[in-house]
Length: 146
Image (cartoon, rainbow, N blue to C red):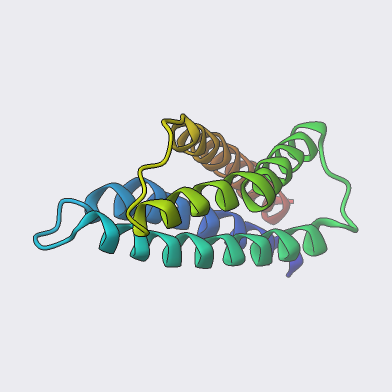
């Protein structure tokens, strides 16, 4: 049962990233009537919620995989995902949140590449989750055959 929960959480998490980071975030600013402040306010709420959900999913995945022997590749992917999520949570998202607050207060923040870095992290996290999900699905299918 824990392996099924793990696979579900991994695939669900990858879907959240695809839907929110790669679809909702860039499209919201193209909607009629959406201003930069309104889009930033929505973005802050959505990405704060996504981050909390990601932390919960990671905790569930780690709990469910703890007693099992993981391959080196799975362990590496989990470590990458953990490090990227911690980077987002404790450094990058607070920094981006402060930039959004500056814009919302009418101040123009200095130029930065933090949004590009966030996109790169999301791509790596997404690809790591998809790979980990497929590896776990393969293992589940192999177990059912034996």
